[in-house]
Length: 287
Ligand code: CAA
Image (cartoon, rainbow, N blue to C red; front, side, top):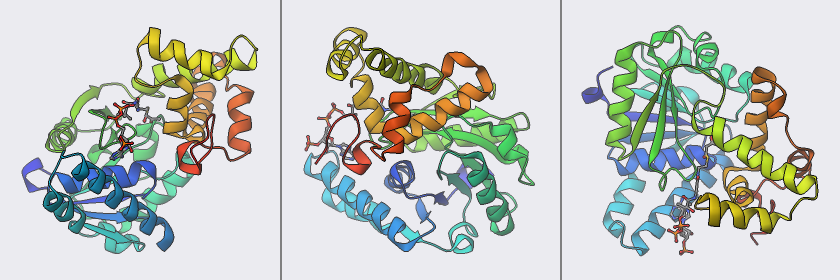
């Protein structure tokens, strides 16, 4: 698939990342088919896109007409075949579990066009292993956005073992068309670049509180005012989703060893469904 031939982008998953990626693609002028497994999930994703576009319009970052036109390019769907059969690129942003993603690709392979590119928004999982369940591993790569996609500039474009250079070139051009800055990750390795750095940082912040060295607020003030990140570690974990961070850590722990052992404080947050902004409560309250 050449970049110039891309017209329709399917986004699988309408959650935090999925709806944000769909929004970015629609803003760039593409027809977007956003799919999730339940009507209520796609409706929530659609409503979140509408909220975000209106917010950007309120702040004069786009006109209300541009916001309305972008929303008009998004179709929300539950049926997989309808979502992917016309798509030139399928961007998958379903939950960060290998088994769930593999099931999705097995299904999508049945309906997607032969020349469509599959790009996974996985935060950490092996691109090579995911590509092996498809019949197009050379047309398969990582396209990793950051939360919130509409505000974050970077996209990691990750090569699997079998990915063709043409696929990486096309997806980098697409990221640029989305008004993002792609960085190529040449080797498929757990957490790629950003999460290999950021997720252990969030975990280490948890260990500091778990070990009673400092409070959540004290740790966050150091992350913001000395380390210089735009958010504190705990604010960031709530923004990303504590469940997402934990899934990435569990995978990095399994693949890379004990340095990545998840802190029990993070595990408790996830067990009690305090997942961050998306549930209204995480390390902080958002109600
Ligand atoms: N769409 C539109 N508006 C949004 C929005 C969205 N998706 N999300 C937040 N906003 C709005 C807020 O509602 C708020 O509006 P009000 O001012 O009306 O209350 C406003 O944006 C806040 O924006 P500001 O520019 O005032 O705030 P800011 O300068 O702090 O920027 C930020 C916000 C861009 C999120 C910034 O804090 C930031 O960069 N944080 C770090 C985020 C980050 O590192 N993300 C990557 C995490 S790692 C990851 O995602 C990878 C993974 O796989 C786990």
